Length: 254
Image (cartoon, rainbow, N blue to C red):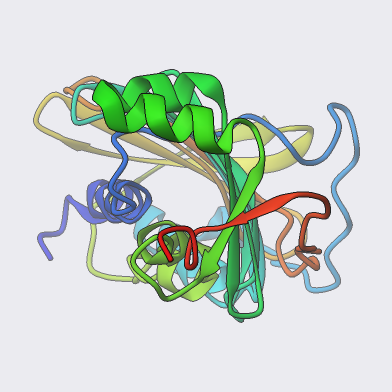
């Protein structure tokens, strides 16, 4: 990896993982902690991270973040020319819960065990266009659907449910990160580290209290600006199967 592109590669790796679901856009916006709620205190501190160099700071942050057993990712960005909103809590056992916004339509996703549960709103069905979208809207409506998590109807979506897979691009490497000043992310003290490539600038915010997690990554300029937020590290995901009338996609055509 070239020395100036570690944050660019991180953005690209995350965006590619999130868009691999066969939908064009996805995004964040909190399902999770209520605004103003205080983050849990970490038990391991990172004394003196501010004294490290820019490359040392980002490499430590990537290593620490990748070690998390679970996390929540919020993303609000332009990907492949389209708005993408995404919110997902996932762990390294493949459990997840969250939602994505695609072409104005929203998909809610829960994966627990070997089953994926998906709920599509009316705007999503309309975005599919043609007779297929209309037929699905009439047949399924706003009910939850379920499918084998590894089957054709769910595997692209559930690729986002494994936090280890989502963090696969978080690899330390030689880089030319520039250390910035102090900042806060949702009230949590942080330090900024910045890299540039072409007309794009990437700014990472790393926690300076507790473990040095990557808390936020902002891309400005270029064709795919956006913000990535990370939190709820090592917290239980709490994915639970929905109840009620659920459409089984695996037997729908039988």
